[in-house]
Image (cartoon, rainbow, N blue to C red; front, side):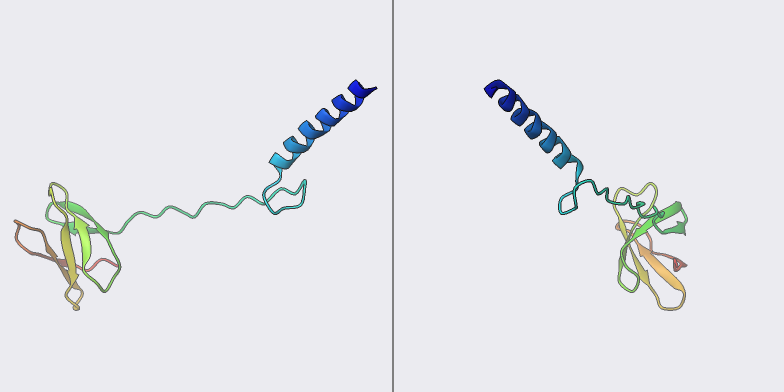
Length: 101
């Protein structure tokens, strides 16, 4: 009879721990949390340059970083306030381009 109770206790402990792994923390047992869709992936803004499309990072209104194809170093994109921006890359001439939206 002792073996029976020992086996029953072991089976209850195994089943209980397996059930606990299925429930998310803080949720009621047997409750499945709803799945959320991941946010949409958007392409980073780009700007047309004389060497191709450059990738722009940073926030509008401040100097932003820009990677120009073929350039070993990033440049700075500065808004001129009149619909154009200046791209400054070390060792290259300054370019004036339309401001990215």
